Amino acid sequence: METILDRVEIGIEKYNWIMKRVHETDVSSDVEFQRTFNGFYRMRQRPTSFYASYYTYLEKNKNNQDLSFEDTVTYLYQETGSIHASFSSKLLATVNPNMPIWDKFVLQNLGLRTPYSYEKDRLQKTIQLYQKICDWYKTDEAIKKLAVFNQQFPGTNITDVKKIDFILWSTR
Image (cartoon, rainbow, N blue to C red; front, side, top):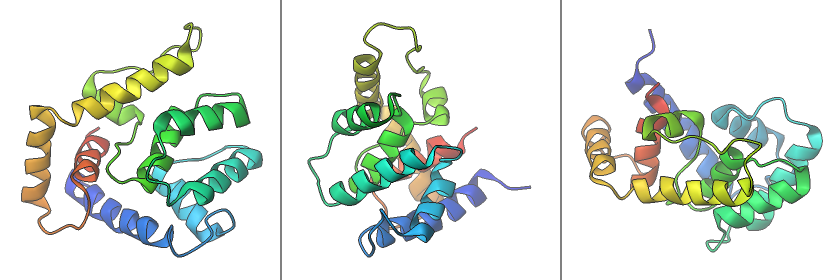
């Protein structure tokens, strides 16, 4: 039976491959990178046009340390007509590993919920919610999770934010 520790170890290997490869290749055309990224971040069953927009944007911005969640989620919204908060955060976190990811497990562990589709100003509320996620990473609870990670996985070469991401993402 796979444990949290097993999931984290496997995840760290895949994550490190992605973070190295993103700077070695043109991600807009590298099928192996896209397949690995999609699998790691569970980006499945999207239209081809979504992937084309997504990976073109990642390629264009992969060295842009000023890229923001707002920029990314707004771009994908304009391109697709849908708010892709989770995928936007994962693109941003690939560009800047000091930014947290957003997914259902992170939200669940933080006691947060995605704005409902019928809510007025949903895009703005999504941007505000991402800021709440970022703010949580500065809390005592986050620091405790970081200490647990460092105890279990000493010597990993990833940012503190990614370490916390792995703990939140693996706790289901």
